[in-house]
Image 1: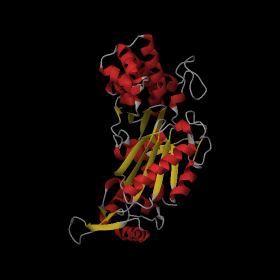
Image 2 (image 1 turned 60 degrees about the vertical axis):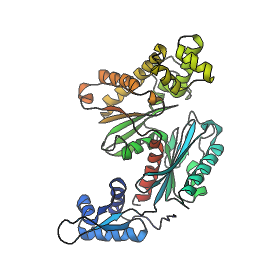
Image 3 (image 1 turned 180 degrees about the vertical axis):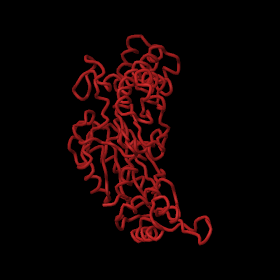
Image 4 (image 1 turned 90 degrees about the horizontal axis):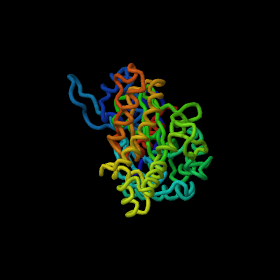
Length: 397
């Protein structure tokens, strides 16, 4: 089913109505008026305008509250968004409805180092396949996350350390031209934070940190319900905080960065070294079987009780916790969510991070601070990317 955006919401009230319908489902005009603090007459006019624009529709009568029954209002049944999550080693594409429920999704291996032309061509191919499978001619918009710093306003990556050839490439404009719809680009950890805010464990949190531990390490910052990007869009790039003055070389060009010690590539490097040196029988066996190792192999070795694999996890978790303890003292968040593929080392890693955060931060800052694992898996990036573009489609000019 095709959905064509006939217009844009023209008032802040209309934009707030659309967000409520997205996040909470069908609501009556009376409920919308009460929630937004406007008169019922005003709400009737705003809903009428949204219906004319093709951004809302009637969804039957509401439950009776005494007197004449109000009408339920909902997002159009044919409204579709696309979320694209490009990682260092794979890309995922999902089509969602207006409420950001994933209707169809594909994940394919992809090396981001192959460059923007190759990766985006593959992303477009997968996107068109998923759209065709869902019978969608043109989505209302596309959100995309990439594993590096971005200029959000111009839609280009900026000197991304693990993305050679992507600096300044017009990712947003290229996809918008090819797909014929609005497109927004952001850093992958920011879109994952939006995914957690909409559908994950941070749904009720107003101030939280989302920490992604994958090939890279980053932090999405949400303040009073709003994503904080910083002046130039690089807020939260904690992977390049130096944790030791002298340490491994990092992709950013410095040494001793957190990411150089415990990003996915660093963990694979240290696991390979341990296996070859005979310090880890479990990792040595996995290396002999597979020819290479990654973070998932470290998790396997930990599950087998391998002491060196456990120590790799504890050392990395300690460093992450040390950085987060400083952020807690500075920002005083209400929640920290840990996600990303390296975070799938699971609760042993979480316990190490949590212990350091609680020991090194002020008691007032940690007395009511949950530090928990994300439960969204691979959906976090694509749902967050769809949330990103839905905000723009719904926003008042």
